[in-house]
Image (cartoon, rainbow, N blue to C red; front, side, top):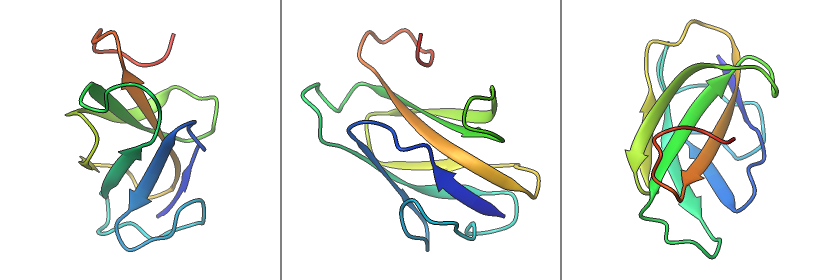
Length: 98
């Protein structure tokens, strides 16, 4: 399984055992996990949506909401290549970007 970041503004995605923005091997078959870091001007304790996509502009195949930045895990992914994105939900709507 290879994963890549979608290059989210103000976010740094760290994949377990992998380097940012490079193809990487997931921690275990079917799971992508790591940490998010945020360096923007909003409070990073807002809900964060992490999503896995087959292509940069495609709908997510899986997603998870976390309470602020930090650890995340996307489980039960089929073997394949994924793009990973992060979105800070400053309005606490429980959904991704508009």
